[in-house]
Each structure stands twice: as C-alpha cells, then as structure tokens.
Length: 456
Image 1 (cartoon, rainbow, N blue to C red):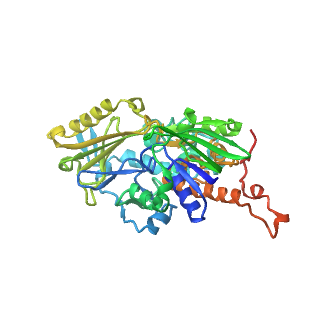
Image 2 (image 1 turned 90 degrees about the vertical axis):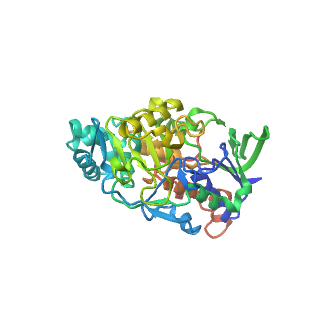
Image 3 (image 1 turned 30 degrees about the vertical axis):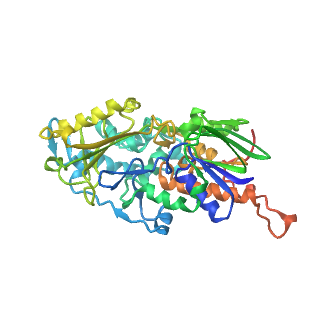
C-alpha cells in the first residue's frame, strides 16, 4: 500500500510530492490535466521564449518558491518598473502620460490598510468599509476599489479587508518582483524530474473513499479509457476551491461540516488572460516603451508588454477580472474585444495583420480550475484555517489553505504543499518522546487554534 496519494499536480501537489520523495515515502500523484503546474504554467511563443499562461511573478526575494528556483539553478529576471508605460492611459481618444488621481489612490490604499487596528479587526470588515473609514469617497473610493479588480476579483463590499491587505503586501508595496526566464513550467519539470514516473496525467479523480483503514481513490485514465484504483494510508487534496465546490469529486463518507462550510464560504475569483503575440511593438510610438498601458473604461484591466525590458517577441497580455466576468466561456467575444480595444488605441496599425498568435486563458471556464484564485470574504481567515485543518487520513493543501497570509499566490501553494506533506509524514510514522510507551499526541501539539481533526 502507498503511503500517500496526492490529488492534483499544481504547485502544492508537486512540492508535497518532492517532500515525500526526499523522505523516501511511497506515493502517487494524479492530475486531471495533460500537464503539471496547475494555474502556474507556461508555453513557448513563436521563437521558443516561454510566456506565462497564469501566475507570472516571484513576489519578493525571500518567498518559499525561491528554494526550488535556486536549487535547480533557474535564471530569473528582475521586473524593472517603467518610467511611463504603467501610467500611459488612453482616454477620450487621446493618450496621457500619467494618472495622478490613480497614483494617489493606490498610495493611500497602502497607508489605509497598513494602519488598520489589527488583523482580527480587519478580517471582520470589508475592504469597502475599511476604505470609507479611512476617508475614501467618490471617485477616489471607486479608483481604490478597482485596484482589486484582478488582484481579489470579488465585490469590495464582500472582500475581507485583511485579505485585501495581504494581497497588497506582495503585489503593491514596492517589493522587487521577478520572472522565471524559462517559465514556471520549467520549474515544475525540474521539481518533478526525480519522481516523474509517479505522476499520472490526464487522470481526473471521481471518488475519494476515506476512513480509519486509509484512502481509496478512483480515477479515469482518459488516454487508455480505463479506471485507475489507488490505495494508500493517506491522501493530500490540493484541488482548487472551485473544483471542490462543484462536487465533481465525491468524498465517501462526506466531509465534516466545518470543512464543507469552509468550501462554501470561500470564493473563487474570476479571471481571464489574453496573450497576443505581434510582429512588431507598434504600440510604443504612442504609449511609450514601458511595462504597459491601459484604456479608460476598458473591460481589460490593463495591457502588459511582457518583454519590454528583456529578450522576447512583442507580446501584449491583458487581464479581465471582476469587471467583464460575464464574458467567461465565450472565447470568441473575448478575442474580439481584445483586438477591438487595441485597434481603437492604435488606429494607424492593422492589428489583424500584425497578429502572430493569440490565446485566451479562461481560468473561470476551465473545468479543472473554475476560477483564478481563492478569495476570502469578510471573516474568511477562519475559513482558510478550517480548510487547511487535517482530517486524517485526508490532508489539505493548495493556495486556498494557506492561513499564514500567502494565499492567492504560488508561494502560498508551495508553503501549503510542504506543510501538508509534513503532516502526512507524522501520520505514517508518528513521533514519540523516548520510547513506544510515551508516544506524543502529535495532533494536539501541531494543530493551530481554530483547526479540527476528524469529526464527521
């Protein structure tokens, strides 16, 4: 019998697998997709340069992902802030070189959220409420809330102010950001290389039977059209919240009440990413050379020039968040909107003829993601803790289970995968103090306040 079955080969599942592999444990990884990496994967452009289809940055110089980047000697690139491009705005048919009101709103957000009276209080109020208390109103309030259109894509009146502050901490407070030159997919390839034979791709799980005797997982090998049955002492579930909410994976018996309430309470934010490769950077003549630009009133949050300061072909990546979420599932409309917006901003360019390739990455419509990232509503900290809580022989990972302030990020998923793997290691070989007669109650000493073990 295996020691563990890992469900999902995203960042969390792969790091959990690497940890178990290093400990010499027997395990298998099952993944519904035909590739590893989940919502942090890349693909080659026309010249072979990798472009990120999902998560694309290392936020800061000390996050957990760096351990694996350094271990596998992958090259990184410092994402240099632009001097004009980030503020170039197309408004009323004209280009402006800056947006002072937007910059002021963004700067004031950082001050407002940093000075909130404690994280527990912040978790009990919405972002909207916190901003109003900090003096935001009118256009300034609207601009500040729109900062979270992609970052935390749910209604600001529902979004936990604590969650908003945590997201801003590694996305907007001046930390240096980096790109993996060879892409996230190369990182996961290197991480999984020692145990690649244990990873079953194109194998969606349909049922997880769990109890005191262990775990039985039923899945379907789509390529062969045959069922796969795995048995283990434990399992680590790393599936996105949206997939667990959809009920496509059946748990027998059902999950404990607090676990199901946590799944019901957390939200999956909507996000769509469009990646367009062009023959030349025709936008630079009007918008300047920089990291990107935006159009006032556009359904796209902004247009990012992916390789403006490093080698790579001309690529504009554009994101749709909460605004425009209704377009999810209609790739034709999304593609048409992307090309139409660019044509309006640059009427002198024949956008269609300049286009080399275009891809719509619709995480919300993706059956194996059902959203871009987990978002905590007011009071959501407890939900993350409850989702992360061990229910032996089931253990829980994924970015949504990170209750240490790093959810909604790849490094949060990495931390959660490592944590869940260590929980499994303690479960399959329990700690003891000095001899078998004085075994430690490991769960008593490791569960954090608010967590629970067992209980149906």
